[in-house]
Length: 337
Image (cartoon, rainbow, N blue to C red; front, side):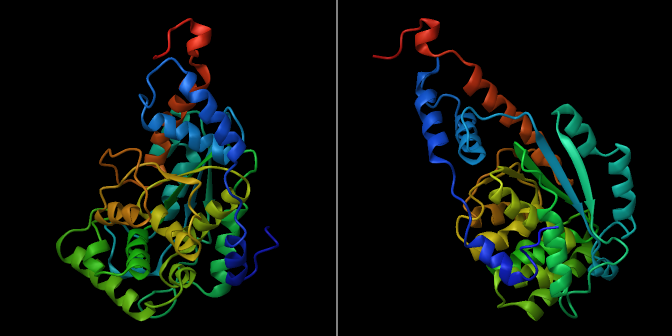
């Protein structure tokens, strides 16, 4: 267990000491890229990805020998308020499905040769109803945050962060609204497929939670309106930064979970890319607020790290091109005049 974090103030202290990207590795990428047998910039974002991997892995050339996915699961007290199309017991059932290899994320990790681990966070004890009080106590929040930190091996080449938790798009919407303002309707979508009166109820729950907990510091918003899996994802992303591990964020819940870090410390998510944009309406808005753009837009809204896992294929393409292409000199190809 990470012994340096025992309360929220320690998280803020850690955010104040974040390592920067490796400029020597970035310079090595910049020196090689113009020599490759292609017009400058012709591989678009694949070039940016290779530069990002070098900078945050702290080495050149970048590599993807040990990509890892971490899926965090938690249960939410607000699920009892009718905000999801599925009952709360589905969280436990889906964790079993992950462990048995039967979920979409299992197939995607096999397809892209990625290690998968699932971190279940006290599933027998849902968070408190955030319309009545904080979702998590200080000790519960820190314990979940530290569990996320402890899940990230130092030898990871890229970390895919995802989640599972019935009711957690309600928490994500509340966290996003609490952090960035606006109305609950701006941030609340269908989640698992709620419609009509159920969607209206979900919006009411988000609005009530934000009204109760607004005007708090970012980490307090995450504690009061989030959940164990959201806190753990934030912890994993902080640990990844400390260990020079670049991160691919998944969908709305994942992005909402880590947004508090960016508001606490500008630049805290510089080592992160957003793997895909969800069809949840708040996700695109949230990505814009964070000054990022997603790698993929495939109409996905599953969660469980699935969109970010697909984006690992782009990372593999970027590494293969940057490291494997011939230079103009070695290929005997005439460069531009």
